[in-house]
Amino acid sequence: MNLKQLVTQFRSDADDRLEPFRWSQDDIRSWLNEAQAEAAVRGRLLLDDFTPGLCEIPVVTGQVSYQLHPKVYEIADIRFVPATGEEARCLELVTREYLDEKAPRWRDASAGLPRYAIQTEKRLRLAPSPRMAGTLKLEAYRLPLVALISSVEEPEIHEAHHPYLVHWALYRGFGQPDSEGFDPERAAQAYAVFERYFGMRPDSDLRRNTRHDEPQVTVVHSL
Image (cartoon, rainbow, N blue to C red; front, side, top):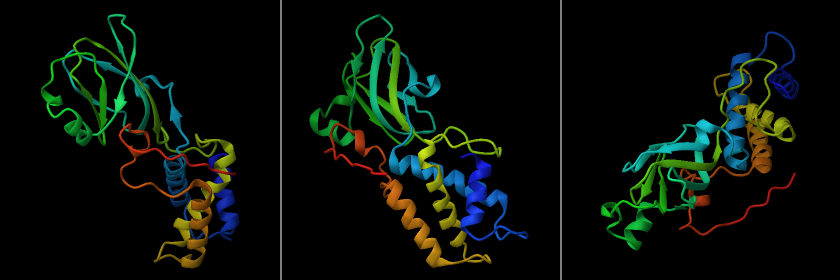
């Protein structure tokens, strides 16, 4: 479904087919963009291993901290590929607390081949400090790269998920307390459908799922 079709579906489901409309095109478009971002996080739908500016980070000798692409929220796999031609090495994703307990002097360790990676909100920290240049190769879960603006643009997530994005927009529309369309019961119903399909939102620590020092739980989503 493209943006125009999603807006049309929203107006049909919300009984907002005739002008003057209760909700503006701009508001509905904004809610649908929110919906795709929410769906991507809840369902971990956008796993990227092909976008160069997102999945490849140049490593400088002796530099330990690197900026992540702003759309990355969880790293699924990370490898260090030395520029010397040596074999690539898989890095373990851990926390500072884990390294503080396992190797208390890790911050002062001599430069070497990186073994660990610590992901913070926007950056990545290597340990130990790299003794050679190279490239970090990432597979990462991310948010949509661009917002839906044109009426012919389609969400990045699979088209099977598109109809369920409308339920988030309905939740937002019916949940506006100062609008003519305020209906908390219908807002709650729409939110329940969206959450049942895409899953509950994780807490603020979005990286917990792929850290090696955290117990892993497999979640099965059914259509």
